[in-house]
Image 1: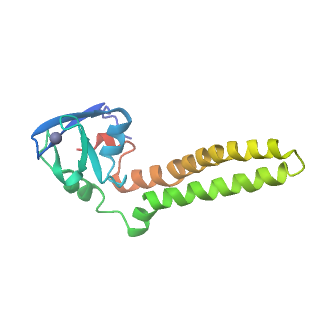
Image 2: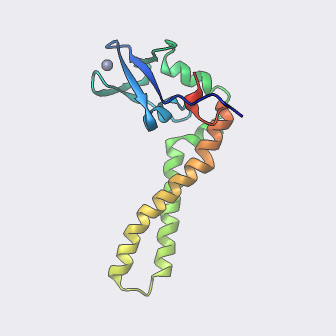
Image 3: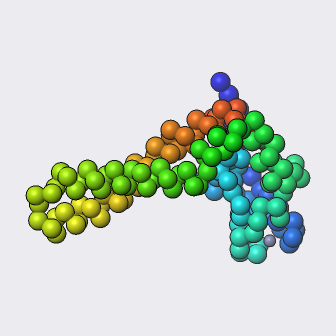
Length: 156
Ligand SMILES: [Zn+2]
């Protein structure tokens, strides 16, 4: 559907200090995603996080808030909610609770130490399941629908 090569990195400028930061890898995926709900990002010169309103893309000169607004203008409030961090936390909690209940009932007859150990492990497993459900069931498909690309690193 889209044969454009995905670029690996892009530079943005911290307008306050005037210096550029090159973002790549997972940070670039998050920063380029208009639905990720970014509020602050890193300036490598200042070595600190600042509100996204202080940043612009070096190549286009467009501010990050304008870029996010432009690419998410077709998103409904429901889509924005389903991609939000609040919803992510809710999905993760749901699966953590579900996993804990499952472990509790499966291992109710085990010794307390075994049960406690598995319940602690269940926190992590439930968290991982919840996170992947959130990403592959909500954040990714909605992002694709709203932005029209499978990878937001393709957006300019
Ligand atoms: Zn800076």
